[in-house]
Image (cartoon, rainbow, N blue to C red; front, side, top):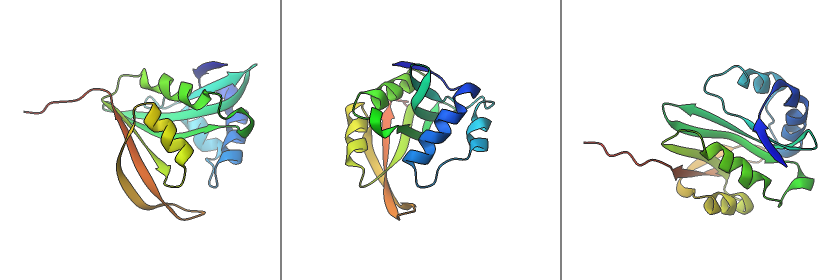
Length: 146
């Protein structure tokens, strides 16, 4: 398994991952747009040249926001999501944050394992079905303001 930057050659695979993993998948156009953004840090996990998982990260002024993380069902529980998260954390950020469905205890436990902490709830953040999101953040650099 290799972790690489998301490139145009990965679009078909990442679109398939989106469709299989999310009720409201990103469009091909939205994913392709990420390739040209200076703030976009997307990574794919490849198995024999095929993307089997990916993570999307946006960084603004040292603040990291995970947009999506997904792994094909047959590749789950093999450490791929954790490897993708660890790759993102290598970027220069003060913190990295994400939202996760409140019922997704597997993902919540993974995020805790990689150093994220529960910092709040976003009521009715998700639809299809409606559900609250848990906001999870990993502080990388603690700033001290005077």
